[in-house]
Amino acid sequence: MFSGSIPALVTPFRDGTFDEAAFRRLVDWQIEQGSSALVPCGTTGEASTLSNAEHHRVIEVCIEQAAGRVPVIPGCGSNDTMNALLHIRFSKKAGAAAALCVAPYYNRPGQAGLLAHFSYLAEHGELPIVLYNVPGRTVTDLLPETVCELAKRYPDTIIGIKDASGDLSRVTDHRMGIGKHFCQLSGDDELALPANAAGSVGCISVTANVAPALCAEFQAACAANDLVKARELNDKLYPLHYAMFEDASPAPVKYALSRVMDGFTDEVRLPLVPCNPEARKAVDEALEHAGLV
Image (tube, rainbow, N blue to C red; front, side, top):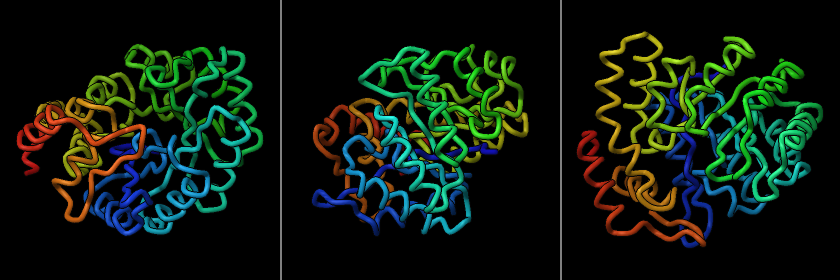
């Protein structure tokens, strides 16, 4: 259903509030540069610091500005199942193509709890769900057997996964346990090349915020089995993938965007602060390496 380069969009702020005008420009630029879908209100979108009203407004603006040109997959996850359902139902009404739902964080459910959480959302949410596994942030790990069970129970609803576990063997686990129709998307830019070789079809990307055309070209080369070109583009992007995490994300991403987009600030919300000088230096060098400045 989804493939290619899919940016996990930042949420721009100005003087503490959502900068709607900057966000609309970002959406347009991403589509013009070849991004194949958009993810607002994910981790990179600082969803954890948005009120529900802000969360829904960001989703609404993204869908409105995209205007059907590409699908929108809003972040709808929560460690409260009912709040996740609220986000899914809002996204459905707003015109989203699917919901990205992270494994519940902080309360650390076991596999039985994860199965119950995602089953409830699948049965009541009325939108296709892309699972999101990022144990480095949630502590909870959505194991392959649980993913396979969910996909078998709800084949029309649990349609894919963004995997940021760092375990490339899971791409094959999911493919062999579910089938090729299950949409696997890398959640780690630096692992997108080997993930695609194993069976992923794209990446929900941090780097694509800053380098949408290069990320789209890279994914197109992978889809065309042009390994030489894919490697060349991956080498160009590789330092940038790591520079995006030289300080707490998305501070480096927003700094990078302030360098490549006019009128874009590097403002983040507490408890995050703008990235440190060392991270800025790493971003500057990576942008230069990629030919973006």
